[in-house]
Image (cartoon, rainbow, N blue to C red; front, side):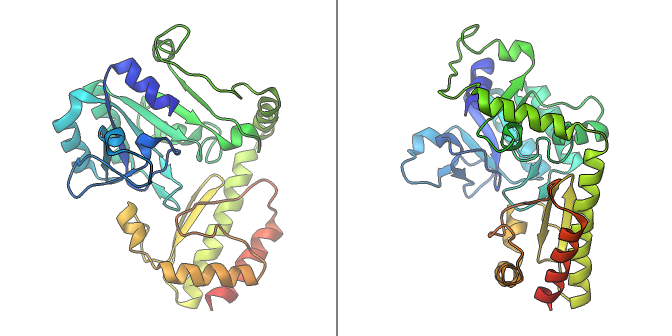
Amino acid sequence: MSALRLARGATGRSKIIKFEGCYHGHADALLVKAGSGLATFGHPTSAGVPAEVVQHTLVLEYNNIAQLEEAFALHGATIACVVIEPIAGNMNFVRAGVPFMRRLRELCTQHGSLLVFDEVMTGFRVALGGAQSLYAKAIPGFAPDISVLGKVIGGGMPLAAFGAKRDVMEQLAPLGPVYQAGTLSGNPVATACGLATLREIRKPAFFEALSARTQSLTQGLLAAAHDAGVPLAGDSEGGMFGFFFAGLLPQNYAGVMATDKERFNRFFHAMLERGVYLAPALYEAGFVSAAHRAEDIATTIDAARGALR
């Protein structure tokens, strides 16, 4: 909410773009879904949200370059920002493709819109530098204009943050005209927990070990499904992973919705009966942590073999 207000204040524009299947908190302007056509203004998906509040929110299909280009062609001069989950953890696990992200960065730069990276879920989970560091390796000079972080930066305590280059951040009060405040801003206990967490994950080889453990889980699940003759697609990055009962990884919300939801539900309960608690919805990513050991991964894969059979 604050990052979008800042983007609007810094650009003097009103419209924002989000993508179907991405979740960015429960601010009214973001509780929308796509309309029937390209660049259709959003319609509220929650009671209590007036249509007027979301009239400036455009909802596009994730990973759809053609839609993105047409939206900027139609509205480029009035788009304050584009907000995106670089790995959509609210569709289970769907990556923004490198060509899509490259074009998104180009269009934002060309039209003077700000690119807002929602790394609340990916920040410090997929890499020490977040998902944006992964795209920077593939796209020379890549960087978002505003970064939003949360969850893990509080080490389990409620804490979130957003940041941008100085010229954008100086638009915030008291230096600038954009209001921002919070009762618990800078809470010392939450901040101390977050700093302690960051010290732990900066230790040598932390992410290498975490990534290897997560990959072993994902590959083990795929192998178990293959042996059982069950179509399963999976992916992981750092400590974040996801899987779908489908032959191929979905690239957008429609693709996620086309996967076998009923089979996922049966698998979830079969795993629960075997002592493994997965996220209880098809739409949620999974996470491996430093607390998980090799035996935990092996136990999970063994349970999956039984459940898949």
